[in-house]
Structures are given as structure tokens and as C-alpha cells.
Length: 311
Image (tube, rainbow, N blue to C red):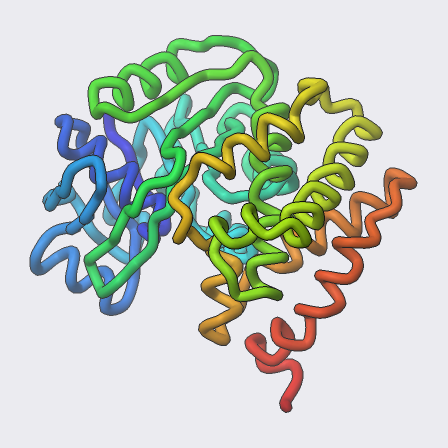
């Protein structure tokens, strides 16, 4: 199996390195100092589950240098997906599967419109992973997993082969019956956590143990749950309770990528996370007062990071 990681940030690098360590042929699409470091010294991942340093078969800024692969793990930020789609062509063979790893519920529709449903799966993953230096990623734990599946729910040979590759790599991998449910379950977990973490600048352990912030997290989850049900997504009846239990069990020092980006003054996925809740709530007739507040509060910083506002 040939797998390409397009966007070797935190989660892309982690899952790619696990596959390469287990013998999967890995190509890495990256750029800048990150790419140069991978070319020079390999991809280094420090992980609570075991450190790795792997040598990708190919590391390039151009998909043309890679050619067709069996699977593309799309690890770019959600706001980078539109640009990334324009470069995916050389990676696509007749049966190539593109698995997006973004935290969001709109990316698969965006990819399907551009690439056709034949090439697009749903994908979702977990784990606290982030770049600490060029060519160097750290994985500090959290509930670490990857789920993916055909959009029509079929258990095809290609998704089963990818799952088997991850199992050989000692990764918790699954092919759910309905990948859209899995996407909304992750959306329900990460978006309130990300928005409240960005506003409070506190890690998940603090958010979960302070009564006020725990209540706000719960309210945010209920807003997303109501939108999902209004849109016909068959979330489990205890989705919020299960999500709270998951967050109770994760590494207390964990922060979301959105929180880290906002704190660093970088462009974040605010529009694709909190903004998506606001948009989809309006379309579905579901009130979203908490996410309305979080979006309006964080938007000035987001616009400054994009160069649209000075202060």
C-alpha cells in the first residue's frame, strides 16, 4: 500500500509515522523548513506510545513527484482544504481514497464537489499532537484513534485494507457503519472545547473541573447535538454524556489546535468550527447562543491574524 500524507502537521505526521514504522510505503507532502528537516533527518515523532524516527519513501512539496497512491491522508488545516484540493490530482489513481482528518462536518461535501464521491471518504481522528520544531512532532496522549469509511457505509476492500494497515501499526482504527455520525461526535467534542479553551486560555483539565466552564462545555455540546438531530444525523441518545466522560479521561494539560493557534496569533479554524455551528444553527432553525458569543468574541483576533484588522 502507498500512502501519502498531504500536510504533515501534528496528526498527519503521527499517523503517517506509525504506518511507515510498520512497513507502509509513505510519501510526505510538506513545505518550507518542515520539509527540509524531514528530508535531512527523517520525520521524528516523540510519543507517549513510543518514539519514532522514520524515513519517508518520498518527501516533497509537489504531488507530481509522488504520483498515484492508494490513500491520501489529508492533514492540512480546514481553511487550507480548498487550496490543497487543487494539488491532489497527481495523487489520484482510479481507486485512490482521500481521507480528510480535519475537525469539521463540511469538508467531505467540499471534497466530494471537487473530486467526486468515488475518491472521498469520511475521516476523523483523535490525539494531542503538534509540531515542536521542523521535522519534529510531539504526541502527548489523549484518546488517540482514527476512524474512516465510505460515505455510503459500504465496507469496501480499500477501507478494510487501510484499517488493517493501521492495526499492524498498533493504531486504534475503526470503520464505523455511519462515518457521518462519527464526524458529528468528534465535532461535538472538539468545538466547544476549542472555543472555550481559546477564550479562557485554560487546558481541558481546568475546563472540566471548574463548575462554570464544565456547564458551558455541556451547553455547547447540547447546541451541536440539536443541530445534528435537526439535520438527520443519528447521534446516540447519550452522545453528550459520553463526550463529557471522554474529556474527563484525557490528558489534563491538553489544549485544542484552535486554542493554540489563537494564543500564538495565528490564523485558526474558528470559521470552520465555531462559525460552522453558528451557520448550521441558523440554517437548521436551532438557537446557538453560546457559540454566537464565542464566535463574536474570538473573531477580532482571528481577523487580525488574517491581516484584515489592526489593533
